[in-house]
Picture 1 (spheres, one colour):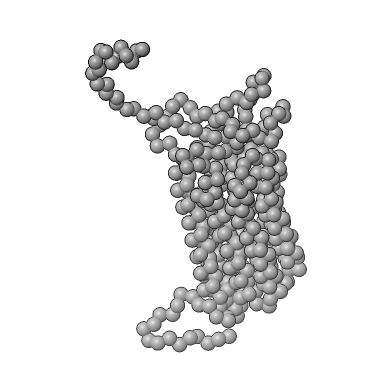
Picture 2 (picture 1 turned 30 degrees about the horizontal axis):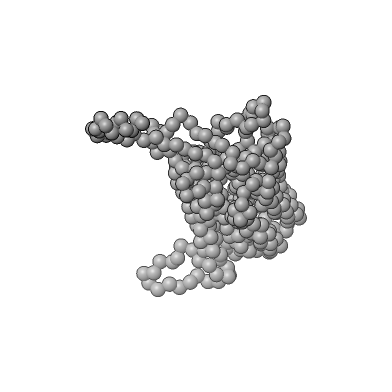
Length: 370
């Protein structure tokens, strides 16, 4: 164990440090970065929501994700305060007991944030398209099941004091993390493939499809992060000094958490919105027809999706008209639930303008009448 550092007179010791026996500073820096990413993402989505003028389901889920993520970051910093990241012989027995209890809460909240971010992503896809509802609900069910299973596997370990099982004394701890990570990667792969499924039948320019899929594929970074996190969890479990070596698993986990929240702001990026909105602010969306006439023509949908905020309600006409620009690939099917079309939402603003008519010669009026 290293001796205390000798500082010059008048120099206060640092709040934390990073060396071969203490990785507190590393955890604090990465955890603070994760908190910054979470709060920045919330600010971006909040601004976009206010600018859009419409609050969707995934916006409410994002609020829950941010709250849980902030709680997870706070609990992680408390765990560091009790000694997590230090060599075990630098931590008192009382602090070690508190540290391991808080560590269990850190792991459970970590699983909850990742699962809620998956659900938020799928709810965004539901707002984006009404296609593939059964598959979407199946994925949502898988995300919810992953949260429950992950928290159950980590909450119930080898002993009646599960917070103490942080190393190889619990033989089943590593297989539990392996199962959680494998399911996490599988669900992320399915989420990555889902946009391809809903965009393939849409009659949209191929270049725009590739652009949208490319933007939504940013979530692919979560897959290697999950694998790297599992690697460092394995290192922690096999280590004789888990409180020190577990610092790397914590830092990767915090990056994983922060980026999973950042990726929820994709729907607010201008380069994504530009695919669905032209220079006049007319938005292309996909919606299903509510009913159709006996002649087979699709009736006008009463639902709407605004691409620009409504600043003056007094200047708006009675409603919005959504006319299909391109028929969907399912046109001709009798089942209205499977019908879809690329819709163009047009808002017509009527402004009051004073028009003054000058006096005209009677002859001019007569000639105008002819």
